[in-house]
Length: 170
Ligand code: AMP
Image 1 (tube, rainbow, N blue to C red):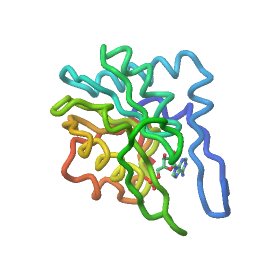
Image 2 (image 1 turned 90 degrees about the horizontal axis):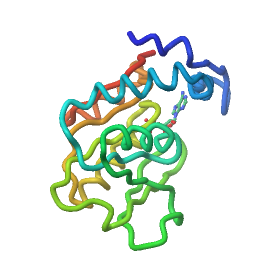
Image 3 (image 1 turned 135 degrees about the vertical axis):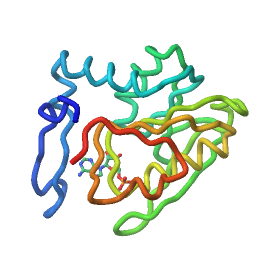
C-alpha cells in the first residue's frame, strides 16, 4: 500500500458516534505528502484524458491540480443550487434521507474522455450519482480515482462497470 496512509489522520466518532473519519487535511498540509499523492494519482491515469471531474468538495482539492498535471480541463460536480447555468441533477440515498448533486449541462462534450475523482469511497452512493451525471452530460468514464477506500463498506461493488483505483485502503 502507498506510504500516504501515515499522513491520513483517523478521528473517531466524527461527525457522529461510531464513524471513523479519515481526515485528509494532515496529508494536504504536508507538501511532500500532497505532491506524492498527486504523483500517485497521475500515475493511475494511463492514457490521455480530456476532463477531470471532481465531486464537491474534497474532490476539488485533488481534482484541480490533477487536471493541470494531465493537461485536462476541470469540471466540478456540485451540491444543489451552486451552479449558475442549466444543470443535470441526480439524487441518491443517504443513511437518513437523500442528497442531490449537479453538473452543468454543457460541461462535457459528447465522447470526451473523463477521469472522476473524490477523496474517499465509502458506500459508493456519491460516486454512483457522479457517474450518472457524467454520462448524462455525454462523457466517457475512463477511470474513477479515490485517495482513500473504506473496503469494508464494499462501495466498489456499486462501481463494478468502471476502472476504479484507490491509493490507500482501510
Ligand atoms: P459514500 O457516498 O458513502 O461513498 O461517501 C463518500 C463521501 O462521503 C465522500 O465524499 C467522503 O468525503 C465522505 N465520507 C464518507 N465516509 C467518510 C469517512 N469515514 N471519512 C471521511 N469522509 C467520509
